[in-house]
Image (tube, rainbow, N blue to C red; front, side, top):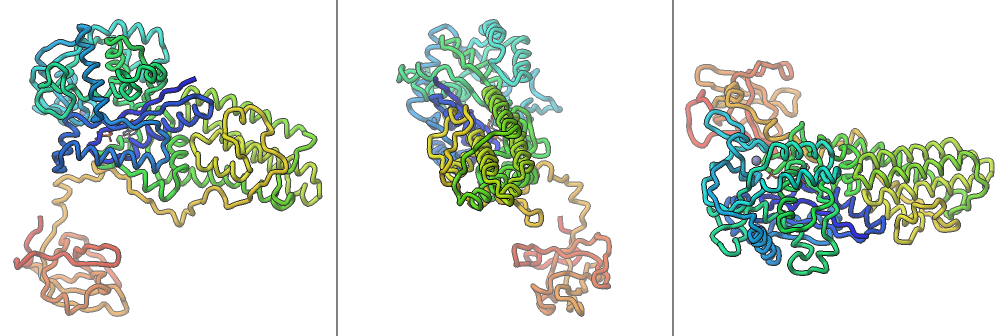
Length: 629
Ligand SMILES: Nc1ncnc2c1ncn2[C@@H]1O[C@H](COP(=O)(O)OP(=O)(O)OP(=O)(O)O)[C@@H](O)[C@H]1O
Ligand SMILES: [Zn+2]
C-alpha cells in the first residue's frame, strides 16, 4: 500500500513563515499517520524558483537569481529540519531533471495538438503569477487590482503559446461528477464546479519578456509560464520521464495538500494538463483555509508574517503543531493567536494530558516501586474505559482517513477526559491507603494503558511527546496500528519512569507574547492622522530636578512665540545642566497634565532601547518654534 502526498512548492521570494509552515506541518502529520498505518509513504515538498516574482525579489536584493534561490531554498530546507518535517524529497524547480521534464511535458502537450501560438492581451498579477481578464480584475478609476490578492495588476501584451484549456471543460466536469470527492472540502469543490460551469478560456503558458524560467524546447525565446513549470514538480520529482518504475509506483498522487488560493491551478489547470498528456489525475486535492491575523491572511507581503521558530523556541515544536491543528478547524480560516496557544498548552496539554500521566506514574512509583502492576479481575468501570477507547479508536481512524484532523484531536481529548474521570472516580489514592493492591494495580494498569493509547494516537501530531511517553512506559517496539488494535499492550513488570511533567505550564503573570502579530495594514495611519500631532522645535532655557522624584526633570522651554514648562521622565539619563541650550522636539498640542503636582504643558520626544534613552534633536541650528513634519 502506497501513499504519495505533496505540499505546494513555495515561492522563494522571501523567507518561510508560519503560513507556509502550516501546510507543511499538516502534510507531515498525514504522512506520519499513514506510515503508522503501514503505508509506504512518499512525502514531497520543495521550492518554486522561476518566474517574475522571484526574479524581482532577486533583483531587489541585488543578487543573481540562481544564487538568490540557492540561499532561500536552503532556508526552507533548514526550517523543515528544525520543525522535524519528515519529507522524503525536496524538489527545486531549478533542478536540471525537473527543467528537462517540464520541457518534455510541454512538448508532448504540443504534439497532442493542445498548444498553439497567439497574442495575449490582458492583466497579470506578479505576486500571484496569474493572468486575469478585464472582467475579472477589480476596477478603481484607472487602476486595476488582482481579484485574488487585491494588489495592482500589470497590462501584458505579447506573443505567447496557449494551452487549449477550454477543450477540457467537459471532461473535467465529467470527472468531477464521477469522483465526487476529488476536491475537498465540498465548499471548495463547489467553487471549482462554478468556474467549470461558467466555461474555460485557453491559457497563456509562455512569456517572452524575461528569461528566468524553463525555455520551450523548440522555441527557446519563450519561457514556460511559472505555474505550468511548478505543477509539473509533482511528477518530475518521482521519476516522470527519467525513472518509469519509480513513477509508476507513486503516481497518481493520493493527496495534493494546498492553500485555498491556489485551488484553481490544482483542481482545473493541472488535471487538464494531465489529461492532455494522457496521465491519470491525482486522487484528491484538499484546499485548506488560511491562518489569519485579525481576519487577514498571514503573508510575506502584508508584513504580518511570523517566523515559526519564535514559537517553537518558546513553547516547543509539539505544542505549536498541536495548537495549529486543534485550535484552527482544519479546512477553514482561523486567527492565529498566541493567547489561544498558551491556553491550549495550559489546559489541554499540561492539565488534561501531562498531569494525568504524572499522577499515574507517581502512584506506580510509590506503591509498586516503579514497576507496572498486573491487572486482575475487571469491574464495570474498567470495561467502560475499554469500550470508550475502542469507540475513540474507530472514530480516530475514520476522521484521520478523511483528513478531519481537528475533529480527530477533539475525540482524543474526549477520551482523555474519560481517563481522568476513571482515575478520579476509582480513587486509587484511597485504594493505596487501604492496602487494596490488587484493585489499585488494575486501576493503574488500565490508566497507563489508556495514556499509552493516547500517545499512539497523537504520535503524528506530537511525535516527540509520544516518544517520551513510550520511553517512560518502556515501550520499545516500532509503534504501529497493531498496538492500537488491542487493549493490554503494556507489559506488567516493566519499568515505569516518573519524570518531569510532559508539559510546562505558562503562568499568566509570566506570559509575554513572543511576537506582536498586528498586521502592518491594521497599524497604518493616514497623513491626516499624523498631522494632528503638532510637533515643534524648542530650546531648553532652564532645567532642574523635581524634588523627591528620581525620574523627573522640570524644564522651561522656548517655543518661539511663548515659554512653557514641561516635566519629563529623563532624570536618570540626563543631568539638568547638560540640557540647557539644547534644541529638542516636543508635542506642542498635548493636553496639559500634572506630574508630581507640577503642570506639564507638552511632551518631549526621546528614543528608548533597553536601558538607553536619548533625546530627539535637530541636525544644526533652527529657530525655536519651527514645525516638524
Ligand atoms: N496564511 C496562510 N495560511 C495558511 N497557509 C498559508 C498561508 N500563507 C501561505 N500558506 C501556504 O503557502 C502557500 C502559498 O505560498 P506562498 O509562497 O505564495 O506564500 P505567501 O506568504 O502567501 O506569499 P506572498 O505574500 O509573497 O504572496 C499556500 O497555498 C499555503 O499552502
Ligand atoms: Zn494577486
